[in-house]
Length: 357
Picture 1 (cartoon, rainbow, N blue to C red):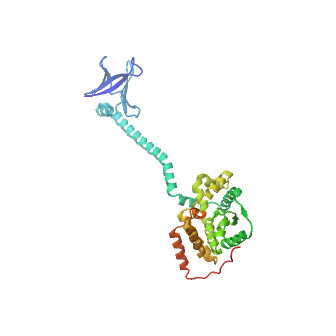
Picture 2: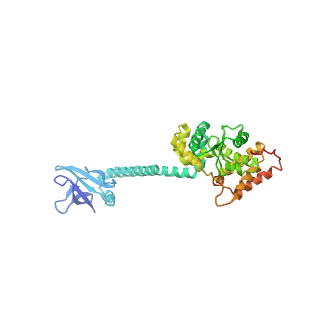
Picture 3: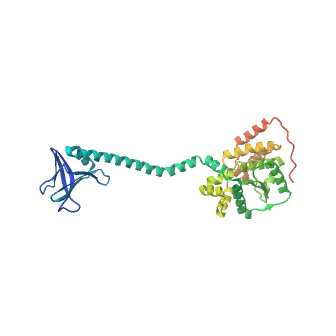
């Protein structure tokens, strides 16, 4: 015999039913409440349904001369025991019930897995973006038209101009001549500017705008040193390091704007600020060093000026180092790599450049 807690619904009973016990004994089903006579359930005509919040409960429903009746067993363990004890007449219903329940559970698991996936995908994408940010930025930047990159650089430069003091004397002419020699044949249309500023610094904007401080010109002792700095900055443009940095910093909005060419003043202002505060990665600096070295050699310019000038900056010391060092961090490894490449030239001679004015 099996006795489980149940709730009985039927004629003359409250809408919420009343507590009872469902008894299975020798193939007979009946509901007892301890007060009235037991209500017998005709197994041959009873219907089996799923009930309960998680559909793990069992309902037995039937009709008699008084009307429609139902009894609910909501406890999952009691429901399983009841299904195992039901008479043979309900075997087919039990099989269908369990099959439906398994199917429903399967779909519930699939739904839960889908929900977890939906919630996890953004997190995984963010993790992927963070771990592969350089690679992704490089891939995206390679698809940006040069004209759009140039537009970004020009707009960023316009944002900076109110704080710059352009110099248009012989010093700028010398920088332009040297810059043109270094960039001949490039896909970019370069502009070289000199601004009055005591900081030893130079920077390049996306699209080919290069700015040199008068403080840097004053710090050079031979033109080859300036050539080394310019070659390094030019390679930041050629390798699209600034563009990649903006994409990583400003994200999808920058990608869309650069891809479509729809650059607004706000984006340009943010980009300009980002570029002013930009610090390239170690790999980007090494890449600019190596490619800049090759550019100097291919133009017949002594590359030792590059290593010479960065060594000079590193040795300058003081409580406030040259600004160029804050955006172009020096390292022993970089210097050693450059010296090794100079040694590999085997004493090749280069025609000295004209002195700076």
